[in-house]
Each structure stands twice: as structure tokens, then as C-alpha cells.
Image (cartoon, rainbow, N blue to C red):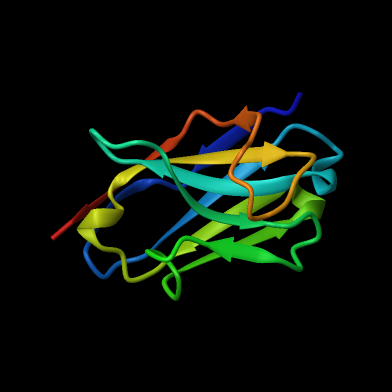
Length: 122
């Protein structure tokens, strides 16, 4: 089991930036592939980004490529999502997720955080 806690959400105007953080409870954090997902009101949860265990491989949804950057600090048990050039369409609850097995491109994750709200106004 691993517990995940997100932070860094908030309200920002279009074109602005936010940095989300997710900290994990397990000391074996480096064993986990980490992902970010989001769910907008009335929509299904969707994949945003993922990063491999040592950070050498990343993946992004087409809608955020070039605007969002995922990174991790295994010494701090943390994964980050830097979000730039935010658009109203990015408004959603953002969730951190973790898995020990699988690939960066797979969107199946067993462990989830509680989510943090991101609101982008036009």
C-alpha cells in the first residue's frame, strides 16, 4: 500500500501557471511509476502524464504536451506537475496515482490520492 497526498491546486487566470505536488508514504517510492490524471465536471477521469521509476521516461496526453512537465524527486518521495499556459479547459480535479508494475504508457493504476482542485478562469 502507498498513500498519496496532492497539493498545489488553486485558482489561476488563463495563461498562468501552477505546480502540483504529490508526496508518497512509502520509502520505496522509487519502485513506483507515477502518474497524474484529471477529472472535469461531468466528464470521465483522463490521463495527463506519467513518469518512470527513475524519471528517464515520461508520457503526456496530447492536450497538455508542451505546456505541462512531470518530474520526480525520489529522495523526497515526491512527484510534480508543472502546468504552464493554463487554459479554462484544464479546470479539473487533479489526481496523483502510483503503480509498481506495468509501463509508463499504461493507464491502469491501483493507488490514488484524494485529488486537488485546479480552476482556470478566462
